[in-house]
Image (cartoon, rainbow, N blue to C red):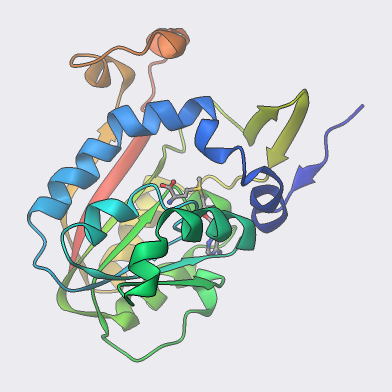
Length: 229
Ligand SMILES: C[S@@+](CC[C@H](N)C(=O)[O-])C[C@H]1O[C@@H](n2cnc3c(N)ncnc32)[C@H](O)[C@@H]1O
């Protein structure tokens, strides 16, 4: 029997309550989270946007430091999990969670000091407007951290297995050259860009369950730190 391929909205609504236990979360926590952590260290406290926040696994980093954060996500169920985690910050007005497609993010121009958007681009078929939207809502000299699964990583769709069910979410691979061009076209300066290979990642910390990736010659994920000018 063929699996249903879910849109991001339907797929993440279906798996929201299991998302934090997905085995890849361990991977991101080990290898991506420290990158975000060191970026946050150097951010001036301000107003930020987590575009595609999901269950909010990175939000604590910003909220604990005193940032004001808007978290948007296309999936209401992912946001429900997120809201549950951060009740205290919602009640004090430091966190605002909004169900929204980031492509429909029309707000005051230049209102954010920073934007984080991690592992969301691969859920969006046409990313041409993503950087245009980000460029219009970020302040001059504001910074963005964009990460995603690398287009050369061996996978076709996002696959999650829970309670003997397989949930497949449609995934779109965007060439690095395109991401690069879109960032530059929208007046973002590339401050840092890295493609992460398994060999580099495991130097500091090995996760046995991802050992099968050791022979993969292509990068697993990438990230950009961008500055608006
Ligand atoms: C792989 S998860 C990553 C979540 C979070 N950034 C993290 O690091 O855990 C991708 C998230 O992007 C959201 N998403 C996908 N397309 C979106 C869109 N067009 N606008 C807003 N959110 C979107 C999904 O609902 C999902 O919660």
